[in-house]
Image 1 (cartoon, helix red, strand yellow):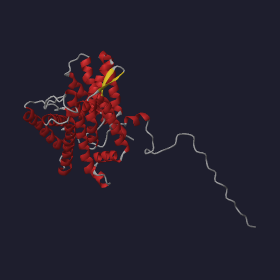
Image 2 (tube, helix red, strand yellow; image 1 turned 120 degrees about the vertical axis):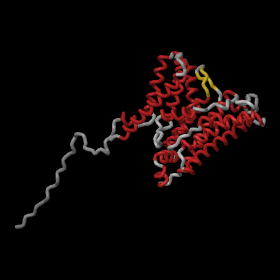
Image 3 (cartoon, rainbow, N blue to C red; image 1 turned 60 degrees about the horizontal axis):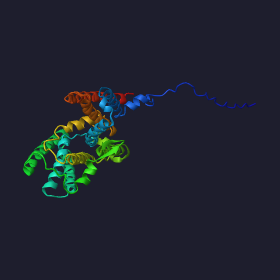
Image 4 (tube, rainbow, N blue to C red; image 1 turned 180 degrees about the horizontal axis):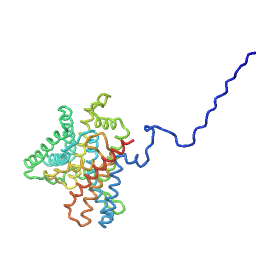
Length: 358
C-alpha cells in the first residue's frame, strides 16, 4: 500500500507590533536636527534674538519709522549680499565688490554730466562696465587658476585707484557733480531710490527690490539647473566638470551677478544723494561677505542659501541702527560685527557637523 504525504501549508507569523529594526542608513533623524541642518535656521534664530534685544534696550526701535529705517539699511547691504552669497556657494568670493559699487555710480554720474546726456545713458553704460568687471574677474580666475582672493584683490586696488584718479581728472574734485536737474533723473530715481507710504510710514523701494531679488535667488538655487551647477562647482569643480557641468560659464556668470548687484546699489546711491564720493566703498566688501557668512554660507563653498543672507543683512541693519537708537557709542558696531561673525562661524560649524552625524 502506498501512502501519500501532503505538505502542510507554511504558517506565517504576524509581524511584531514593536518598533521595526532598521540599519543606520534608514533611521529618520528628529525634526529638530533636520531643521538645524538648514543653513538659514541658525541665522534666523540669531536675527530674532538681536531684534528682541534691541526692542527692549532701545525703545525707539519699536516705532514704525525706525523699523523702516532699519529695513532700509539692511536692504542696501542685503542686495549685494545675495550675489556675494551665490558666489560663495560656488566656491569663490569677491574683494572688489565694495569699490565696484562706487565705480558704477561714478561711471553713470560723470558720463551723464560731462557729456550732458540723459542719465539713462550713463545708467546703461555703468551696467555694461559693472558686468565687464565681473566677467574680467571670472575670466582671470578660470584662465589662470589663481585664487579668487588674489584676483579680486588686484581688481579692488585697480578700481580704488581709478575711482580717485579719474574723478579728480574729470571733475577736479573727489566727488562728482550734482545731476538732479538732468533729463531722466526723476524716472531713474523712481526705480532706484524712491519711497512709498505704508500705514503712514515711508518705506524705501530698495526694501522691495531686496525681497524680490531674495525670492528670485532662492528659486534659482532650489528649482533650476543653474542652481545645481552653483552647488556642484562649489563642492568640487573637477567632479562637476566630469559630469558635464559648465564650470567656466558658472564661475564667470557668478562674478557677473556680483557686478549686477554692484551696479544696482551704485545706482541707488547715486539717485539717493545726487552725487558720489570717489573714495567710498572701501571695506564694504567685508560687510557683504560677513552677511553671507552669518547667513550660513561656508567659505569653502558648496553650502548655503539665499534666505540666510537676508537674515544676516537684517542683523547688520538692526545692530547698526539699534546702537544709535539705544544712545550708545556707534563705534561699538564693529565690535558687535566681530562677535556676530565669530558666533555665526561657530554655529555654522556645529550645524555642519550635526547635519553629517548619523
